[in-house]
Amino acid sequence: MSRPFSPHSGIELDRRALIGAGAMLVTALAVEPAAASPDMAAAIRKFTGGAEPKTGKVTLDIAPLVENGNAVGVEVKVDHPMTPESFVSEIAIFTEKNPVPDVAVFHLSPQSGRAHVVTRMRLATTQNVAAVARLSDGSHWQETREVIVTIAACTED
Image 1 (cartoon, rainbow, N blue to C red):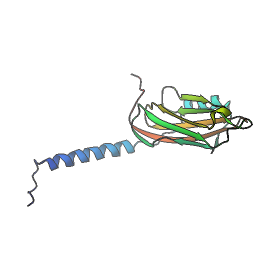
Image 2: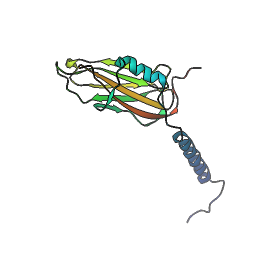
Image 3: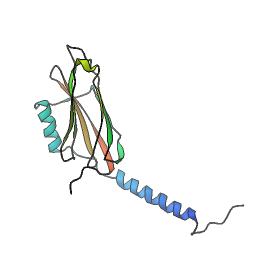
Image 4: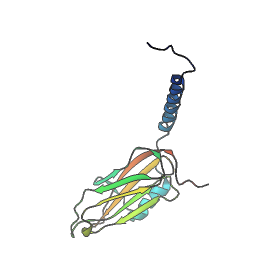
């Protein structure tokens, strides 16, 4: 036999909690898409020596929505051979709204075997993240992803 609904039952509290959580999620997703920042663009230009990176070859694997920006997993792969004649020499990761836009640079050689790096980083807020690869022939390749961060990290007081 079912019990009658009571506004003081645990069901009402669960519904309120669910509505509150839904409202927080909608607020987090309603953040405007991040625009490219001059600092990130300048950092990428410095890395590439002023050359405009091409799109392709680079795969940036990062979650599009992260709850906590304190430890965000990042994986970068470059679809390019790693032979003595032609290889990926560097992979760099950039962010547009962190206090310092250049997060990391990984130096590779043909002995690396493959152009694949995995790391964690902090994200200050919702922003674009870019991975740029430098090949031994001097060309640069890039992929950019927007990441929505609900709890910011690396903020300055």
